[in-house]
Length: 474
Image 1 (cartoon, rainbow, N blue to C red):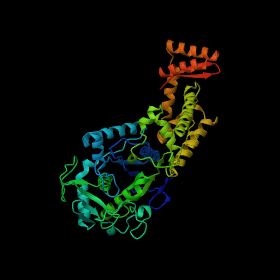
Image 2: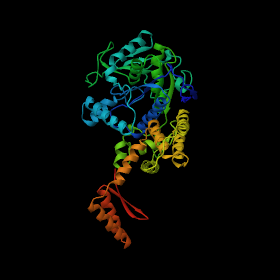
Image 3: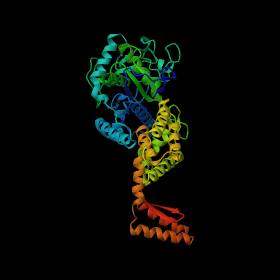
């Protein structure tokens, strides 16, 4: 299929053409592991997973790098404030290394629960300190750096004429990064730290020797060093949340292109924010945010959240509400139940290859057109509704849908059938019979009390025209 993607650099949809035929180098900015990953961040990772799946289904071999930031990410865009990792360690009363491991493990659990394909490489910033020092030395040799005493080594953005080009800025116009508080020791407001010195009379948990003194690398440097080490001097796609475009990604470009030439990256993709009911983006810095555990505690399947995310386009902000998630969950379950019926059909027929190819190509071409996930899901719904495609062909197409969208429809449909087939224990059936009797006597309070007991025991009771039905909860 022809693949089209919106490129933040050109601000238009372009046809995707890889640097090397049949292969794609793909870098994604990963989490800073000082706290749990909130569902806004996870929206970005889900959309990146869709991009990867679409490329794979189009026949590309994808080398996917996603970093783990475990040092150097300060609490302020102005290169001031605490290192987020040190702050997390103080909050949790643990070592920085314990915090990094704990929240990395938690992130990977969420990553797996959401059925995201594992990256080819998941490097940690602390494992690439020498590569970051080497990069800074190369910039220093070319005259792009300067030193601020008792602070660190800084990048001089006035030396890079293209600074801010990713988001349409320049040094004479709209300056990417101008929103940060100006440190009057900097030469320019947009200058950023490459290497921060450890505070005097204070021992940091994470610090290293360097040609400039003991300290730690800046956040913007790590992505450049790791991506070029693992993907080469030039690669195809760099992605991340839209909040990274104005400062972090412009700073990456400013460090990389003086060393390797332009363009460093051919396609830049940015995923829009998940916003809360007040219209604010979901952010860990506020101190209150929703993680996957909050969704799990309310009984939501992780696939319901993935389905919610795919109902919107990656370039559009998505407003989160519990009501919206409930609606998405019901829509997802409806597809699962219909697929479960297909799996139970005794006469499924044979897969019709011509019909399969037609629907396969329709879905893949739609997703390949700038990742139109919602439109692709409409086609999935149409496939379920049509009577012109037999059960065997629909099931084969759903195997493809699960590879393409990662929604695990078949897995959930099989589990649904298994749970429906399970016979309730005698004591649960007795509660259901007592509830039916209470309803017939219009004793609604007792009926509700019995339903609650059935639910607490791990069973769902539903009323049908033939009476009540018990289904084992997953």
